[in-house]
Amino acid sequence: MSSSPVTTRTVQFRPQSRNLFFHILTQCNLHCRHCYINEDEHGRGVLNQETISSWLRIFSRSELEVEDQRLKTKFSPRKECVAQETNVIFLGGEPTLNPALPHAIREARALGFRSITVDTNGYLFHNFLDKVEPVLVDNICFSLDGSSPDVNDPIRGEGSFDTCTRGIREALLRGFNISVIFTVNSLNIHDLENMPDLLVRLGVTRFFIQVVGIRGRPARHGAYDLQVGYEEWLAKVPKVAHRAAQMGITVNYPKVFLSREEEFLCAGLEADNYFVFPNGRVYTCPLSEDHPIHSFEIRDGRLILRPPITELDLFGLKIPEGCVMNKILHPENIPYDEAKRPLYKVACCMVKEEVTPY
Ligand code: SF4
Ligand code: SF4
Image (cartoon, rainbow, N blue to C red; front, side, top):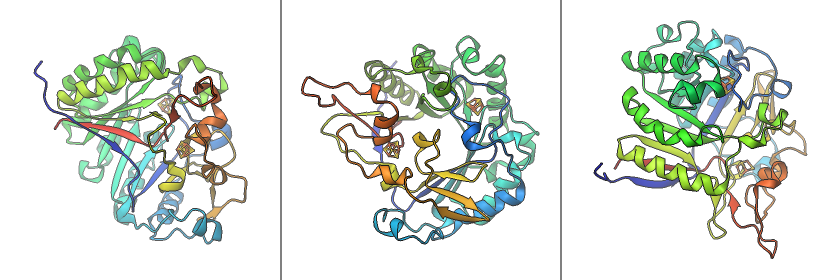
């Protein structure tokens, strides 16, 4: 193949930008081995239309109505954004299982959110594609963890590859913008290199590569063997991303590791991200989600800052290992030299490399 030019850049946190990761239910028809949903911590509720509208309104306001000196001084980057600067991502569980999803999308559009994404496992329940017009949704992101049923289905469930790829084809036919997300783990990293060809065959031009996190189901089952090591990640993921970009696909993947010299930034301090769950918990770091250390709660339609100790109190700790939540939850991930200095830093999971076809 001729080598077409590609561009790689690190995508840090965008100033004046807010991201709302809105879990509108936790239930799902699948039981993926790496699923991060933890119903004990996130609830089993299914949000109705009224609640979704009310919660969307909270995050569409220019200034979140959290009056607390702690936020204003220690966490000054939590800045003012309006709906036009807020991206909403509807997730679950499987969000299309919630019949209120089309309403949620219309409501977010009416409130003026900058972009609307739906993350789905591809089953597209309740005839989802019949209920919304492509112009209402900026992106439908389909989850696939293998380039064939042989790799995908043992991770995500029998028949899920065929159903998901059928959903992708149908969505493209109807004119939706779509993308695919692949969660790299020890069971499928060997197959990542086959994904660009599959994506080209399907007509997909946007690809997100994610790294498995040991939270939710894998944490409960002690499935540490799903993790992928430093060397293997660096040897495989950037190469596949580069090749996919040469084939016309834009790829995002987490940076994961930083050299000792590279700058470390924590999204909990620098960015404005909210991970909202049906029981009203609102986290600002996805790694915290297995623990009751959420920063906020939604009560009676208001966002309430929780008293210490929460994740907000941990982000400011400066450690040579980089990400403080990783150090607390997964200290085994970090190798040290003889002088007990970490060999590398763990990057914030929200920092991405983006490889584009030109
Ligand atoms: S599709 Fe998503 S929510 Fe459902 S089990 Fe898989 S990872 Fe969990
Ligand atoms: S993943 Fe680590 S660096 Fe990123 S927000 Fe959480 S604590 Fe901060």
